[in-house]
Length: 349
Image (tube, rainbow, N blue to C red; front, side, top):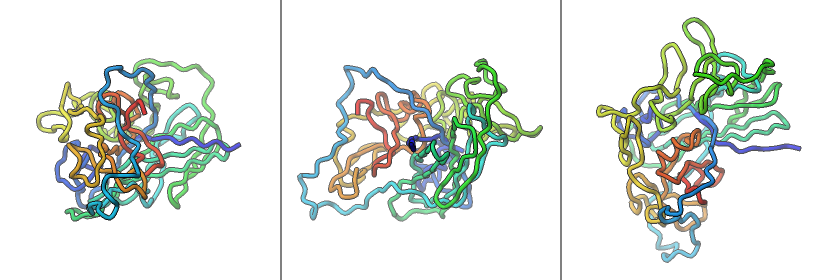
């Protein structure tokens, strides 16, 4: 019987993820430079949090009424921000060595990004019965005047497939065959980060990845990321003789590289300078109705009213603590197939 799992995936800095500014800083709405190619990366892993504070701020209002106070013909016309699938240009294997059933690997999904588009959380649908994986890179889009040409981006998605055999990966009209090998027979040896054969050889949230170094291909524990917000601590960078886009032990923010507006730099990490709650996640018609970095998002195509939401661009649930640092406490980035399925959600929802 076919079993389909819907996962958000991981996954170079913030400037390549978003909009049309020209700042080379980590920003949820970074610039689009001409003739640039970017390689964001995604990973999958959401940690459950079963205990919520009894003193949490106002619960979020995510269910929107179809009976708004303003009649539909009186609704302001300011354009809607929509969540759409990107048109895939190519699909390629990033890892240098074949994965096994106990080791993760990364693939690259290439697509174009316009200056008015912001990357959204991609979706991965795994059909274990047919050994097929459907990859869906997505963008937040709202046509507007902005400077900057369209550019090609590469989303690096981290996968772990537990069945041995040949898998078919599909993204748009592109397909890629990946052979998942049987793991060697030995127990996991969790230790300090270093050479590895399995994900379980690495301390969480690291994965056992492979890449091509100056001396040839190798495997090692690494924490894949797309931006420094994805990292437990440190910065998301690419190494000359190592992995592209992994978390490294160095500040993710500093005076010369400050956090985007709405976040503060604390101990080298950007943390939210706001608390999402019902007073911020309020009903809206236009972006101007929202405060701070929030945007007016409509939950359905036929909805006559939206809600102010904080959009997510990477698979921040790679680690719940990193996601809360971006979204504010008691909130985490969630991906779904809904029209608003790439936003910070309250953990009580």
